[in-house]
Image (tube, rainbow, N blue to C red; front, side, top):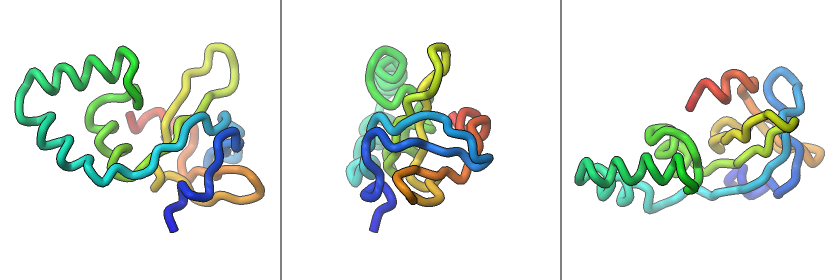
Length: 117
């Protein structure tokens, strides 16, 4: 069973150090067509530019291309961060350690999560 199937919108997210870092805002399952998308995107430089611009101006996930590819392949959750100035983040399915007692526990700290993008 895919770990993302146990995750629900609104669940609290806890990092590896035990800190509550936000709530699940969005759940995206693995994309089986991601490789086809990659081939099409890498076919021309213009496509790569469009991919990058769409990541910055509205399309999810709003991360650099290599991280977006990883997220699409494994599936991911978008985490609505706590606090007014806090920025949302994304955790790939393989960064989820377990789902237990209505919470998502990550195998990464908040800093490791933000450093992977």
